[in-house]
Image (cartoon, rainbow, N blue to C red; front, side, top):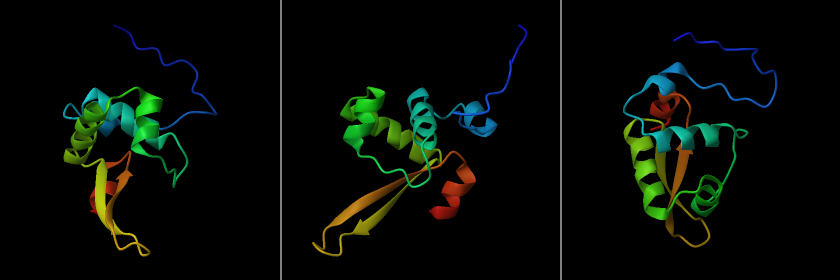
Length: 105
């Protein structure tokens, strides 16, 4: 097989690390989630409902995908507290690079 890359795009593309692409432990769904989220601008905020709608995942499928991304150090969950209500919740951060995720955890 011969690999032909063609002309590199100069707009509307996302750089993906070779470590992520070649990581056999990352599921196809987790890979797609990481790529999709990191294709948005820094600070992009979306709900699980929005992710499921955009990528076509069910609730349980998305949970499994998130677990895989977290186990492979591409997703970090941090517990947060709403200042007004006092209720606890989770903030999720997804990274294209494991080192960035490990640095946050």
